[in-house]
Length: 460
Image (cartoon, rainbow, N blue to C red; front, side, top):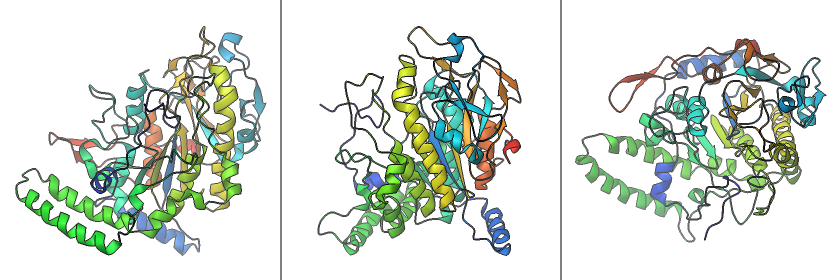
């Protein structure tokens, strides 16, 4: 019997079957024609004219699924009653006036390189429904685990994925989470999913990029022609046009399969050992761990995200679950989550800066909501969308800033309230995405990329 996969949380089982070639074509993500090419080319031309090397803008979303506690991380309340402020103290950051939880000393040391929004809020306390809001900007449908609106990554794939056809535009590490689907944009704009290697913790294997022994690329080309013939027969009887879309998708998927750029980008084992150690290694699975799901196991995922944006992937979402700290919350944060978060997050920011990637790469760290201001009877905090925080760095975001303010107990926005849609609008603008573009849903209705939202210019 399969045991719970520490990469994915307590309730999910590890998938061990390797995907077939056909499933690879369906699971990857490749862009179709977009609408913002001229804007991006103008931006690159301006940079070249100024004598600066230019890179396409990219985004890393560090998805802290479960809901990280804003009070115990980025918005401490040292003057609140004990049942609100919790067990942790505070620490002064490098930027005067900005205080963090004392569990984040490395983050405090580089506070001048990243910023915080402390006044986010929405009105849904469900995990998957909150996921939908933060990934799409829209409320969910009847099944919150399924997208009825496309995620930000799928929008990116649709509009600008064609600019780097040798690489997927949208990658999920390790695989798609609720809210991150393509909805009516179709299979061509689903996320490309990586796979953790169960035989080598901290590594990732991509069987899609490994050919069976004795099989050459020329032989694959012959098989491609045969499959194209079968697909042509199916296309003749396909009135919906889905086969035409899959033809385009298949062609571009083969470009990725045979691309050395893609293979190299996903080869985490080629990273120097000292860099991997700076991010931290994943602990082994421990079914007897005292906290809810054992220690978090995602540090090397964050390093892989850096490799992917360096290679040219436009949007990488890293699944950093499971911050759902209802029970023994302070113990879980103290002994597992926060030390590893502090190490990996600061490693990413410093690594991007040293490689000249921070200016072009926007890093967004957040979850679907925060945690309740009052500590519960199990020494944890419960779901709470009334106010929460997010951390942003790179791209247009200047470091050392705090936008918005929560009240004295971290319960509601007190000043400059912001919505998840405002965060998405900032990310879209950085990538050159036109949020006023409409796409047709399954019923033929035009749906705007983002229903509302204004980029958070206070960061810029």
